[in-house]
Length: 279
Length: 248
Image (cartoon, rainbow over all chains, first blue to last red; front, side, top):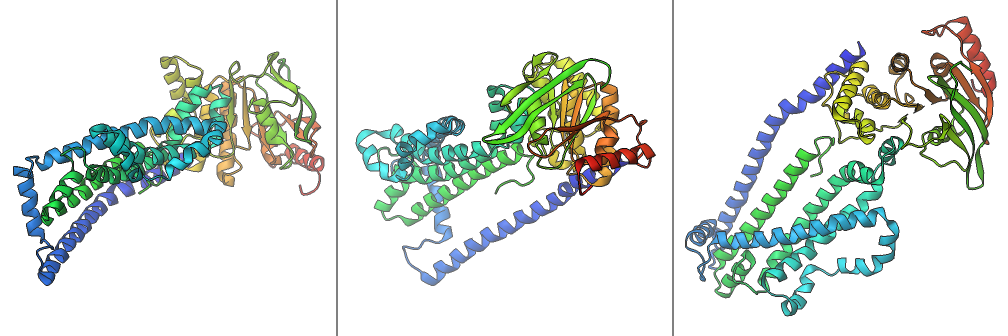
């Protein structure tokens, strides 16, 4: 009888979000579409009011977008090339940030003395913004390596810190379950610590992604190569061609948004076991 | 003491700094015995359970199982905690696997035992649910299934039903007895609840307040299933109340 009551309870808990969820997500989609259109409309109206050659209308920007996409810029690079290079640099630097940030965060989280003994040497670097490294890297590094280094700087610390502070927050009772059955440290690390802090790590990755994205644009503006969205915007600034600059800005916003959405979807898929998914 | 030999021997003194928590606490447990350790809150009951499970090193003395110093790697131990202890990222089935997985039980045997336990605790159909999707009582049933899934030398239960409502608690007590009778396992059940101890135990070890010693060890020879209204039950309850002092 008890089980039956539980069954009903569970069935209710499981079915309600499933059916209500679809209708709600459609409505949310609609709201977002309306909000985006409202921004566009406001922009259009503003151009009618201001009427300046320095204030392009959405229509002019759309034309610049198509033109850049099909015919390329003054140097012959299409938008796709610029986007591809920005993304490739970002992916390389971000990946390095993950590959170094997660293990180092785990190591220092598990062995407190290691962090306690090195923090004065490590932490100050966190407060030097990646952009402040640009002058040095202009002298010491060139091209791809410079961009990757700067993006790595931007992505590393959020990921490292999220991992580091996650480790001590692992529930002792979850570890004790494994210990009672005779589990070793390696098992506890793989099967308890990492699954427990994975949500923290993913959160750190989303913050790191934001910083990396900020850094890539600034890094590309510092020159070095002829491709990349940041570079493209600077080129058009020198030509005082505002619609093309705005195209670059919109694409940066859209790509950043898309990548964040991808990470969020991964989080939702991975952490179905959590009541609330961080947003 | 029941016939069947002494499986677990406890002889420990436990200190936290200058504080003596357990003062030469000595008792033994027979194979397949169901012992309740009864004491007021704050008397070191949880310390006893943690020592037996190897979660805490003894400051003095030892816990031995079959003549060997208790060791989670060598012995099959299991623990049912009072607090939620299921791994929230694992389904019901994968939570029950944990002990078997750590002891590297081969896959077919492991699957069979997990399926048996799911059947035994009545969780069929819920194998793929996550802990957040099931009720508190069901969670504790999963924790019990996880403990009994390994053929444990010793299972510790530290007030596992304290957080459950009265009705669910009675159901769970009967369920634990049913599983224990089926699986024939040695169980040490820690509680502060007199009725719970009388309902469950073959023997009740009553602890004093800190520094904790054994105040009494009583065999419970009432017929099962035990009836709260049975004169023997009431008499024993009265006796335990006196042993524990006031409030009861």
